[in-house]
Length: 334
Image 1 (cartoon, rainbow, N blue to C red):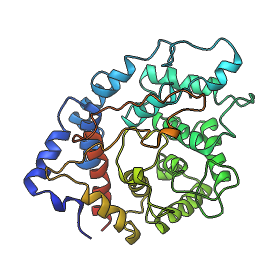
Image 2: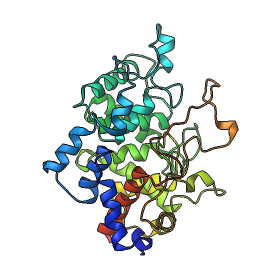
Image 3: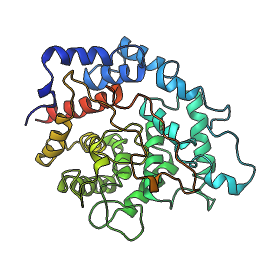
Image 4: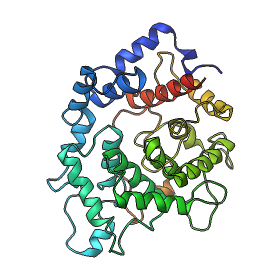
């Protein structure tokens, strides 16, 4: 199998790593040290980069807009009706969306501001005695929340475990998941599998491992992108991904779960390799919602407010980091 680095020479490979190690984005620096260079958590450079994540770069910018009580909305609701949509809607403008990005960037509940945000979800979206909770929500939302809270360090909380139990229950006969009731699984519904990938292997139950095996098989059987007519947004790379799917999302999820050596990944890996630029980087292709105008409104009829961490069409540190993580897992498995 041709390596993803086939289009980049040895010098540019080192140049890309140096670029990712620049101090302007400590999240990228931290994950490059740990995931690409194999440094340990107690390494002084790793510890320094991690300590800077809430103070500098993208995470600091997001946290600067957080309200003192832990949310991002302009004001908190005054009644229970308001709380049913709070934290989740409007899409891309409410707390759920920056919180997911902060989880991706490496922040955990060790940061007090993250604890405040997590407590809001536990209080208003995961209250066991309340009918207004996520435990019977669409699996798209459940998977995103479970992944976020697991990254924050709450994977052992019984309410988070209940989210995982719901995703196991909601898995379809063909091994996939679907946000639409009574429909077979679809590649577009990737959130449950990604949520399982956020759990360390020792913390996965037998039921979880069975769900993972069936779910990964569903994706591999379709080469991560062969489902119906060709859907162009799947072949463009995005971040934040919000709840949308693309080939890089599929590759990252499946390889995180330990299936990096499966031959059925080859077509998706070729797509990834072909999208690499001559300088060894990958670009941010689009910002979501990368869909038709008829889908650019949320459930309240309001226009989506797209946002990104990096400029579209330019070399992206986050996309490049994600692609190189996939490459390293594939190389190590070969």
